[in-house]
Structure formats: structure tokens, C-alpha cells
Length: 386
Image (cartoon, rainbow, N blue to C red; front, side, top):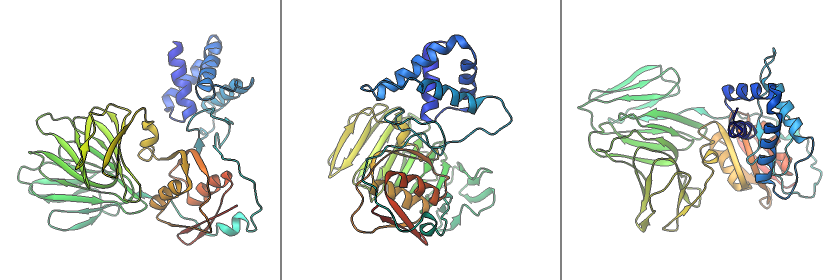
């Protein structure tokens, strides 16, 4: 196996993005002793990339390889699923187990009087597929409780709900007007527009779109959405959010336009886009670039970690040196809770990822490893100094 392929598989494993097929490929590689040197060299290279001033502990490569073997070996036991893994592997602590990495800002610990059981007396479940569809005639359909099959006919256009919960449109020549899908706090949804464009909506978001895509394809969004736009050079695709318009070719990109965020962020994964506002526009963005709109101005950031940006779409929270309010805003939207602070907001920095399928108490227990404490009161999270 080429060394470049080995390093690719190792990086995918450490970052928690390895597919089952890639895990087995990596397992087969480990099973062949002639690849030992290449495997260890790959692990050392990943370590050096993120921790250049500190040599990798002598037994670290053996520990990681043993863990890969234990997780992937064909024995009669389920594959262990991590609930937390590194945002940047080996950036400080790489431990093998259920919690593989947690980036901390050391603080002096103070004893909390209440026990965890006393503070977490009730459970809040994570969000799921929830949304409301408003048809052109004003009819509102609750999508999470609607039966599978055709939900509506609008000028020949069919709105169909698939078995996986996704909404798909089948174009109709006489269709006119617009539809809107709106997700609540604690909801997300996926839909396919009449032109074949696929859209993922995050919690507390909405999209309004035409039923007939014969002319210019233009949609309006609030909140956060990920787009995989169907190519059609004769009919440009554009996305509006407030004062900003994103002009699109066939491409994949993410827009975060929540009102409670200080800037609107448009991140390009594939293709090309231009972000425009009343005060100007960005250059043509390349994959990995992010246009940031705030204060009437657009700036462009390079080399953005796109996997972090779309982690929500793939079922994860992902933080990179995020402060406490940034983390808690995501929890508010996904768990449909209110966050309040007792005293000053704790000055903490968080890095890494967690599954969005975890119950709220499990998320808070992990966050408490960063020397902060929480209490749950109904659907309210109280953040306390520790």
C-alpha cells in the first residue's frame, strides 16, 4: 500500500471521519507487518504537524495502533463509538478511550456543593427531523408527523415525503408561487428542490423557494443551511439572506446567517460563488474560503476547516477554540433550551467534537471537564462558576 494512502487512512481515523470500509482497509494494513514503519511514520507526521515543539511519546504509536486493531478486528463485539474526538489530533492530549481529546484552559478547581445527580434531575433529548411546510395557498403541514407519500399537489408540482423523512419536489409546468420550510429550535430537515438542488436546514432556520424553476433560481434563507446545487448554466442559482446575496454555479457551500451571531459566514466546499452585499462583494471564492459579512463589509478568510463548518449537517458539534457563549448558543438551538449565567460568564475555551445525538446531560458532563458546572431546571441550563 502506498505511504500516502496509509497516512490518509491514519488521519481519517484520528479525526473520527473514517468510514467502515476505510477502517477495514486500515485494519488490513496493520495486519501486514511490512507496513509497521510506514504506519508509525504516518502517526509521527500527524503529531508533528500539530505539535511541532513536542516529540511524540515513545509508546503513543503502539497505543493508537492497538486501539485501531481492537476497534476493527473481526471479533464478535460491536464497534466502539466515540462520543468525543480531536479537532486537531495530538494538539496536546491524545488518550485512547471513550473520550479521546479535550482541549482545556487550566483553571483553579473549586469544590461545587451540589452533586451531578442533584444538578441533572431531568433529561432533555436532542433535536431531530422537525419542520413546518407552508404551501403556496397558506396551508401548513407538520412534516415530522405527516405520512410518507405525496403531501400536496400545486399546479402539477408534487411534494413527496420519502421514507427517510426527506422532502422531494417533482416539478410541474403550471406551478406558481413559493413554499417555505421552517425548522424550530430542536429541529433540522433535508429537502430536494424541483431542480434537483439538495438542501439541509439546521435548527431555527427557514428557506423560501419557488415552485417553478424555469426562470432564475433564487431562494431566501434565515439561520443556517448547507447547499448542494444542481448544475444548470442557463439558470443561475442564488441565495438571499437579509442584505446578502450569494451567486452560485454548480457547487456545495454552507451559510450561517443566524441573527444572534455577530457575522454571517458563507463557506465554499466545492465550485465557485460570489457573495454580494449593498456595500460591495467578495472575489470569486475558491474551495476552503469563507466570506464573512458584518458591519456592512465583506472579508474573505482562507484555509477554513470545512469539515468543522458542516459538522452539524453530519451529526456533530465541532468547536475550535470556541468561547462559552458560542458553545451554549448551539446547545440552545439544538436542544430547545434557554441558557442563563449565574454571575459572570466563565472564560473558557473549548475544542473538539461531540455527537448531536447525545442527551443534554451527557453533553454537559463532557463540557464540565473544562472546569465549569451546569444545572438543569426544566428546559433551562444554568451555567455556574466552578
